[in-house]
Image 1: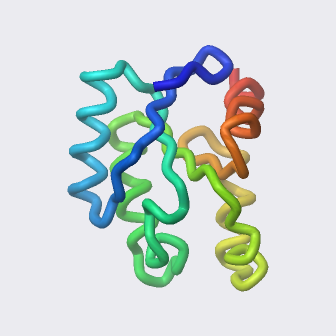
Image 2 (image 1 turned 120 degrees about the horizontal axis):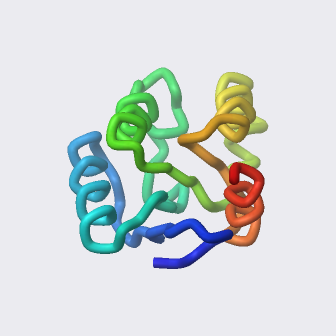
Amino acid sequence: MVDLAGVNVFVSDTAVATDSDAVQLIVDAYYAHQAEWIAFTPEQLGDEFFELRTGRAGAITQKFVSYRMGLAVVGDISARIAASKPLADWVRESNRGRNLLFADDLDELAERLKDRQ
């Protein structure tokens, strides 16, 4: 657990393969750590998360929205963004929203969270 700009962020060390995995992690992070956000590396979310046509990103993201938990993807995804206009558009729009953020590192995530307060 880290405090980023006054926000409790649980930095996960667990991979999320399904929306059921996401729900279990959300519950654990909230009740055990009082987390408001959970941060994952791109590797923890897997390639299918970034292939939007699979629906995996939508299913997992929807669980976070439903449970009012923020989802942060922390790590370099520039190559993925360069290879996919839909992904680039989604990342850009997500970073303007309230539930899903993409950041290169925890310092950038802290700045993005600070801007939301």
